[in-house]
Length: 161
Ligand code: FES
Image 1: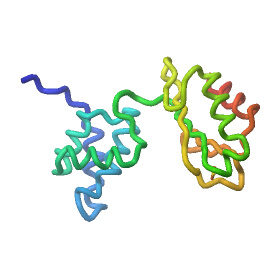
Image 2 (image 1 turned 180 degrees about the vertical axis):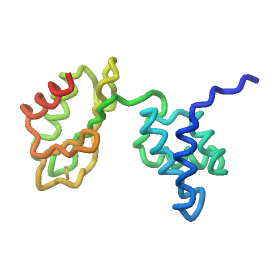
Image 3 (image 1 turned 135 degrees about the horizontal axis):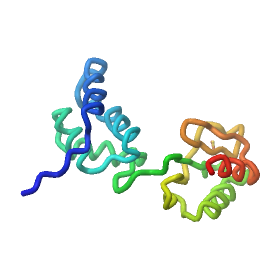
């Protein structure tokens, strides 16, 4: 039987191993290890799950359970170089969050949850981003965009081009 090509490189393995002393168990390293792989590959393919499990001395199913629980990690293909979450919870919905999401998706030519063909952008919906006082909100990478408007959404998209 052919062996699957390894996806974790030495740098990722070392970064994961470096976490071991900081956590009480190997299992507790699962989530940060998934983040390490996701930061490098922009997704966590099944083969990476198998390799993380080997490193942590867990079963692949245990790692996969953690991955599926969070709904944050993409598995089939990488998310865009910029990943955007538009809040659709109540405060933001009441203040036009859905329209912002629709507008961004229409301009990018994708549906929520999809990535543009050039790999530039992924747009997703999110539940409350913790900025309800500034609704509607959008998170782009690590930046929270507050009081979003259609104009701000356009300016954001233009800044990516
Ligand atoms: S409801 Fe959108 S940030 Fe809280």
